[in-house]
Amino acid sequence: MRVDLTRNVCFKPMTTEKKTLDGITLEIMLTELVAELGWETMAQHINIRCFTSDPSIPSSLKFLRRTLWARTRVEELYLNSSSKNSRT
Image: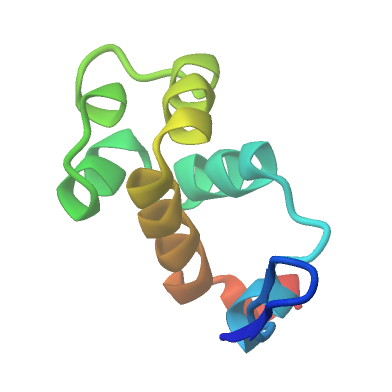
C-alpha cells in the first residue's frame, strides 16, 4: 500500500482476485453458488446463520452487504467453486 501524504490518500494495489470479480454482483455470486452447491453445503463452508436458518437470497444479501468478513468468504468460495472455469 502506498500513501500520498500531500492528499491524505491511500492507494492499494489491485489484486488479480478483484479483477476476476469485475462485473459480478453479490447477488449473481449467491444465486450461482446456491444453484451449484445448495444452502446446506454453503453453510458447511461458511457457518453463518443466513445460510443455516431459513436461508434466502434477500436475507443473505442484506447480511453480506453489511459484513465484510462474510462477503470475503463468499467471494473466495465463488472463485474456488468447480464451475469457475465456465464463468470466465
